[in-house]
Image (cartoon, rainbow, N blue to C red; front, top):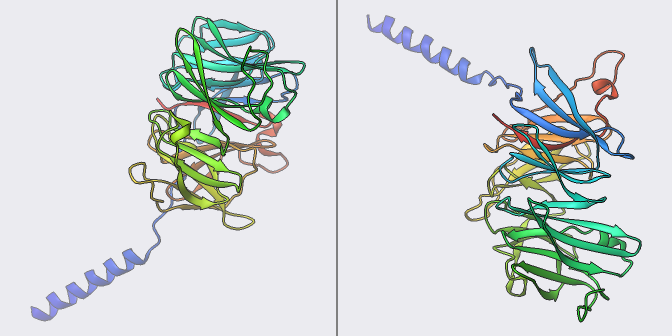
Length: 353
C-alpha cells in the first residue's frame, strides 16, 4: 500500500512539473467598443471614421463625416471637437448632434479638465491668436501675437485647471502694454477678464493629467521631467523623469497613469507606466515593433490595452502588460494592410462600452 501511494505521489508530481514547464499560452488582445479615428489624405481634411469589432476578429468601419483637420475628444469621452474649413464643430457622440461653435479655420484644439471650455488658435498672415471658449461659442481672446514665429504659431496651449492654461508666446503683441521677452511661458487665468502671468520658458509641456494636476515636461536637453502642478509656473520645481530620450505617449483614459515608450532595439520597443502615487517606474512590456514619431496612441481606462495609429496605413492593438501586438487589418496574400482604405489613421476617441 505504501509503495502504491508513493508511486501515485511521484506520478502526480511529475504531471504537475510537466504542466508547470509548459509555456503559458498567450492570448491576443481583443478590441471592444467603438473607436473614432481620422484617416485619409489630410490635404482637404481627413475622414472621421467609426470602427467597431465584427465577427471572427474582423472589424467594421463607416465614415461619419469628411473634411476634418483635427479632432479632440472631451475628458469624459462623450463629445468631440472637430476643426473643419467652416470652423469648430461640437459633436455629441451618443446622439450624433452637431453644433457649429466657432467660424473660421482653427487648430490646436484643447479641452479644459472639466469639459466646459476649450482653447484654439487661428492664424492670419503673421498674426496668431489664442482663444478660449465655452460650449456656447462665447470666446475670449487670450493672446494676439503679431510676431511671425512658426514655432510659437504651432505651439498649443495646455489646460492645467478648469480656468487656467499655459502657453508659449513671443512679443511684440497687438494688445496694449503686452510686449514680452522672447522665450516666455505664460499662465492665463480666465474670469470676467483674462489675467496673464509670465515666467522664463525653461521647458515645454508634454502632457497634463486630465483628472489631476501632475504634468510631464521636457527641457532643452530633451529630458522628461515631472511636475506636481503647473497652476503657478513661477514655483514649479520639476524632478527628474523616468528615462532619458523616451517618449511620453499619454495617460490611461480618465486617470493619471502615464505611459512611456522607448526603443530597445531597431525592431522592438519597451512600453512602461509610472505609479501615479510615487512616480516610480513599473515593469515594462517588450513590443516587437517600433513606431514612428508621428504615431498616435490611446490607452484604455483599465490601462491594459493600447491602440496605435501609425503611417502609412497601420492600426495596432497592444496588450500593455505582455507586449502582444495585433494589427486591426492584418496583411493577406497579394494585398497591403487594410488595402489602403484607412490611410495614416489617427485614433481620437475610444468608447469602451
